[in-house]
Length: 107
Length: 118
Image (cartoon, rainbow over all chains, first blue to last red; front, side, top):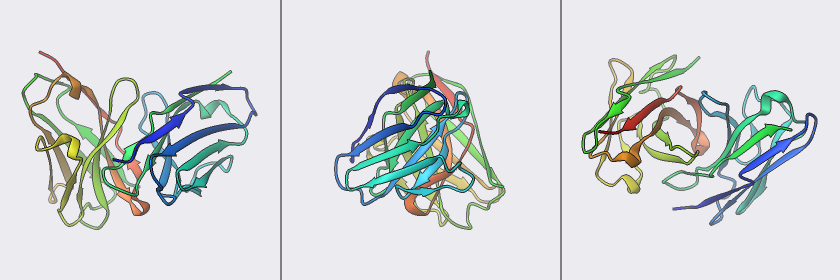
């Protein structure tokens, strides 16, 4: 299975701050990476697919980048509604695998 | 707008079978895409369990070996999860989701919390 290593495990940021979350795959996943946001008591919501494509309806302050084995999610200006847990997921090979999650809070 | 909703028992005894239903509205499951089950364990670990495709073929996570079965009822636009011989380690929140191109999940149910305990 492809292992997804996500960092940091938790993060606190001030309003307006830029936030970056990293995800590293155990092998080249050729941009087959998605990012999800999950708020407490809610289901995960797709933010980014194909490593850098923004899902419809997702604010433009979210962006994804990376290639090969290294990927990142950036929030350009932290808002209160961005609090939650963020996951990466590889879709190149079965079984799909997820990162361990990053809990993002307002400082 | 597509919506998915999980339903089923919230408590299952060890060694028994876990059965969940995913009811889909706003999209016909035979029209396209794959229909997955994913679970989230306490502590945030997520595991993709498997899918049933729009044509009825299935693909399972090898970690679940022969314990898992995903089936469907096209007349009700539902698909199902059965997980056999459960242990306390199967305690999790179970989600159903639609898998679209690029193998990402663009629509999820609200989740069903299942506890395995005697």
